[in-house]
Image (cartoon, rainbow, N blue to C red; front, side, top):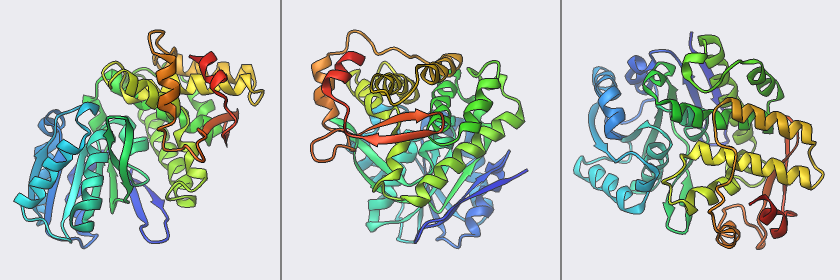
Length: 360
């Protein structure tokens, strides 16, 4: 059964379609949007080996002219250098203003393809087909696109909404367990910041560290509820003027950990998991959250098999300095997202360097 979640925005509303074997319907769904005939699929070699032919066939059967561009897998390649190679392909294949860039892959592919779509010819059509759990529940929804700068993650980017997000849960069967667990960090995040019922549902599950432990009902539930949570937040604050910053729960310290380990030690969801534990500890120290609720969060993260401890070898001074490059810095002060109850968080700039040092 297909689930359709609307993302209502003033000028760029779109739908998220969640459908088993949805890749087979991709061409027809895009055709209904009356976009141009040219589509450039951007993916990485591993994902394209699995799902490239299926995707291209679906698009060609619907009458589209299709080419593809592959970028290496990994956060290390989310750079201006590899973005320029996407631009080269759009030029080579003569994409026009009404043409479409289609992201087939995880968060890195989606972020880079979206930024390329936002900036090529000052904006071409963009479609998201996420293939990782993290991309399905988070990165593909909301229009954040971009690449990394050597001094920080996602410092170069734009808000650019897709025309369509198609989530096909069946592709998760080829997702490595590590990447599945990483995606669960974002699901837990939604439970902490927005959806208490989702959090409690996850607590009832015996094991969350592998797709094999999810029946179809639970998997569908976490996809729908996570996407619904993000859609509700984004529809109220499309460009992160206020509320939307809560979606960065766990990301403030998480991004520092990723950057200081050169994106080689942790995948994104693992760093976010550590960041959530750290943010929870800060919130408890500030008297904003109870120790018992922090423990519930941490037990859920542990049940997913995610890391919870900041590596002891990280340089604390470098971490403090790196926080100043965070996108949420305002008036020179780092803004943290801190929980006050399961399902509720606040945005505060009252976190001192001393508190951060204690956490590290």
